[in-house]
Image (tube, rainbow, N blue to C red):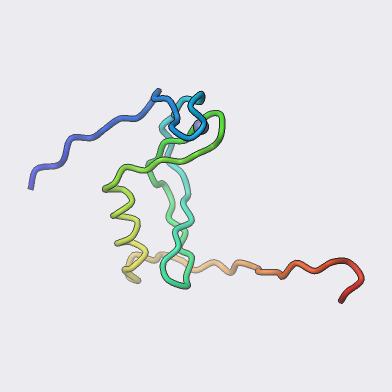
Length: 91
Ligand SMILES: [Zn+2]
């Protein structure tokens, strides 16, 4: 299978805010898979300078879904504290 031609969105104008420019980054993504939240490190993405909107290549998104679905790709588990919001004095 031939690798697909990579589309580089670097420097393109953000379609959300229509003013910011996109910058290529490699970041941590929080990917929801069913009830679980899977953190995937070093995911290639583009981020808008101005509004912070993130863009992923379609194949990257597909790959994240695959990784999230495959438990053997999970290298570590982190406990994430979850709190419920409560107004002061109601507890
Ligand atoms: Zn933007």
